[in-house]
View 1 (cartoon, rainbow, N blue to C red):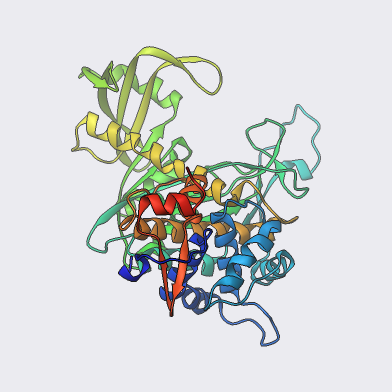
View 2: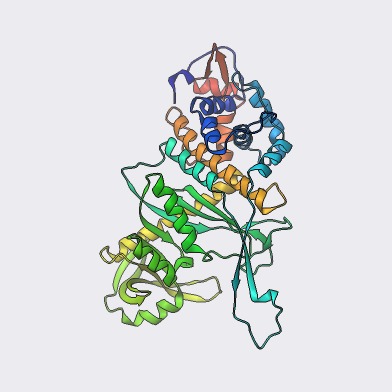
Amino acid sequence: MPQNYICNSNEYNILGGGDVLIDIWLKQNIGELITSHLGERSPRAEYSFADAFLSLFISRCRDNNRIEHFKEAGESLKNHRRFKTAMSPDSYLYMSKELALPKQLIRIDTEVDTNAQRSNKERYQDHEIVVIDKLNELMVDAAIKFKLFDFENEYIMDFDTTEIKTKIKDARRYYDGNGKRAYCPAVAMINNIPVYIENRNGNTNASFNIVNTIKAALDLVSKKGIKIYMIRVDSAAFTKEFVEFINASNLKFITRAKSPTVQAQIHKIKNWEKTCFKNEIDSTGDTVFAYGKEKTRLIVRSKSKPTINKEGKETKDWGLATNDFESPNEDIINTYGLRGDSENLFSSLNDFGWDMLPMRKIEFNTVYLYFTAFNYIVYRFMTRLIGSELPSVNERMEIETFNKIFMRIATEWIGESLSFAKSKSEYAKLSGFT
């Protein structure tokens, strides 16, 4: 963070955190990055695409979770010396429609149950997906610009889906059978940074089209020079098609093996060993079985205490499938266990607005998903930058905490430089804390 942000002064704006964020945004040329990917709007348009991203970003950092709160964020933008424009929620909605792409309808023909009366329409399972390539590319280029990836390193790419429950009319019944409507976006991520998003309607499960989706994500990051050596996915990827694709790509994979395979192969394991995981002593062993065109390694962990699975049944044995034949069982299990942290990304994206969808159609809401995901990447960069000067701020801080700790900081303009109070006691007094 530039040193000219830190100094003492006698006059302050006690809600000046937004000034600092806008100043960093402008100095980092984030608006220019956005425009280079999305292009210029009509000369008659009052606002640019970059204005929409910034308005949404400042509004959320001020702990406003709906676009209706743009008015409050607008006051922050108007007060900034080098940014005079503040946009309305309606302007954002029009902009979303400009960037939206038509949904893709994919029909999968299924076998007909001759014992039941089914219409021709019911023979098909319709899937609606929306992908906007230029917004995926914008996310990756932002992460590269902010040095969130190192071109010298090789990374694990995680792939997962989430359900965004919503009452929006075009959302379909969630495939898990709970009767709720939802969207179920699929996300590829690296180090908890989203690098590829494919929005899906609620009836589409995680395994649908998974090979093509992961391939598209790999192609994108590879084009940008980011090296991937492993794909880590839950049991949605435990298919012969996926295993054959990853093997042909010369990548490693770890995926959760489905229970029927574990039960069918577990009797082959002879090398059981006691291993401690989080203070629990469990048994682990492995075997090799034919899956797809090549052999696959199955590592089974037999828990000392049964757990309850999604179907409400007790289970002791669960397995991981991998094409890593060299690493010890414990290392494979621990590597897969780190996948749990990647799932926290969805919680962060919900904090940025994924669970507050503003539009009435999946095409427009998908634009919103990309906007908020991009701003989450910007947030990760800014909190890291600010945290290098203020120990009270860190890269993984929740947005609500960031609002309380940083957004209420006291700032002042000195010439063309923006500054904030250096003294902790002074900061606390000026920000209204006792």
